[in-house]
Amino acid sequence: MLGILKKVERAIDAIMQPMVFAAMVALIAVITLQIVSRVFFTAAGWTEEVARFLLVWITFMGATLAFQRGRHIAVTFLVDALPGRLRQVTRILAVAVALGFMIALVLVGYRYTQMQSFQTSASLGWSMTYVYAIIPVCGAVMGWCALVDLVELLSEGPDTARTGPDTSDPPS
Image (tube, rainbow, N blue to C red; front, side, top):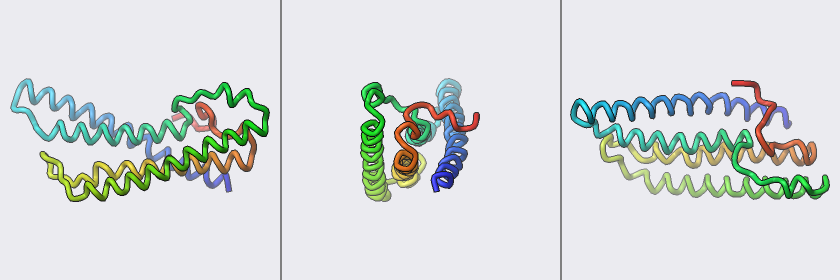
């Protein structure tokens, strides 16, 4: 079962990594267009809005990739000093708290997306649902990653789940 969960997690990573890259390229292009249009032509008003929306998406997708790879800041010296069983219980508790937070992020993000669904962006007239939908989506993906870590901790022991950079992922 753990193998299947990890395959799904790798598939999600294979989708999200190019999405973050494409969004970064688009952000650079939009900001460059904004600068050029302000200097040489009439400013394109929509570029500021698109840049802001892209930044929101990049933030959440990048945070998801960092969470999946265990790259968020963590101070683990105290947990690492604990004996095996207590270390495992502490890590299980920490992952369970993270999973609870991700579930809350999905619920609150969904409600927020619903509240903003009637609002449209000023320049483009896009529904703000498209902008804020990334919150519950990335919360769900991070929750999935936390669930995989929890299953891994419960099934394989204290020193198996991600606590730092994941070295088992193939190079990108």
